[in-house]
Amino acid sequence: MAEDSVLTVSIVTPDGSVYENEARMLIVKTPSGEMGILPNHIPVIASLDIDAVRVKVSDNKEDEIAVSGGFVEFSKNVATIVANAAECQADIDENRAEAAKARAEEMISKAKETHNTNELKRSEIALRRAVNRIKISKH
Image 1 (tube, rainbow, N blue to C red):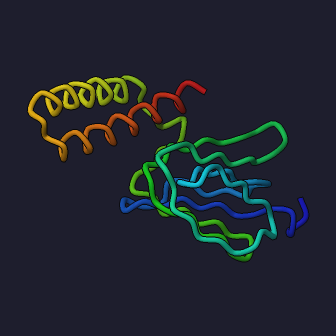
Image 2: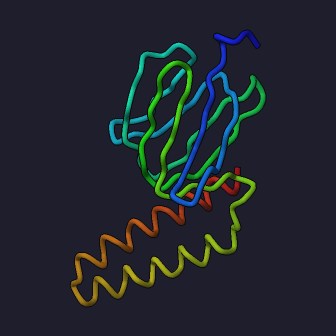
């Protein structure tokens, strides 16, 4: 690949680096919808939803990384994603994610019974994270 036809994608969390690779395209989910970033894209900063970050490495290879919010900054063909939490597809333990989903659903039920809105919001976010990890692990 020619140098100007690739971008470098780096994903970091408070625990350290999770992913780094060169790519042809980066696709992220923002509160406004999906955003695709190609090489030589204008500089951008955007917040991220709980969803998959898709990195097109080549025409027939795409890496998926589960992110739990954060933001993406892109400038000079370097995309840096700072995420609250992130896991590469191969690193996701599907059984652990299913257990987290079951716990979150139980917490949602209890929060509804006790009318605890703060706990309900936290539990709904935990459920979204678990469902995202499960979805990505199955691709």
